[in-house]
Length: 248
Image (tube, rainbow, N blue to C red; front, side, top):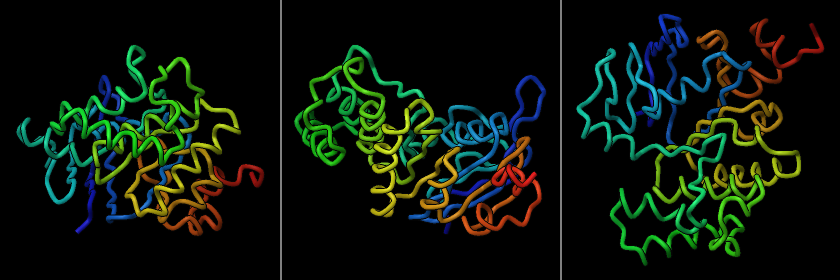
């Protein structure tokens, strides 16, 4: 059974269709990279999967449970429980500026998972250590580099023990050196068989990381397949134009 499945997912903003019947599935441990030009619907798709936007039609199931079926959402209590399977690393970090690194990582586990402070802090310190941030637990977000801030965001997401971890352009705000730093962390998560959905413009990284690639444009999936099929030897002409622009 797929750990994540969408069928005919649709979303409109002010009557304008942004998602036009998106369907795909994701198996446990699989890494899915979503590519496409800006404005093609990638981030909206991710926001619907995370229930940050409500779908207008279609279905989403997570870990075998229906979040929305034919446009009708599960009861609020069920939605909250189902969404605990999902973790998110935001493009713009979204760390609490008035809280330390340790507090940023422990707040949600204490509030949502109901962990005692000592247990939450022990888990947070273990995660920060794995991500090379042990010396930053007392720092505040303004004292961090972009790469460090993004690694804190990853630690914060992992602290909730999600089954699926989502990334929306995790390196878009970083320079090349810091990009390499964050991509190394994502590679390590992939090696540990974390199930991931990654929106990225880093084609070389997608080719290395992904088990499957979705190419989206104008709110629809135009192409889907292995990195070899989509990024190296694309069969779809529009995909070829996007991933091999010099051949136009």
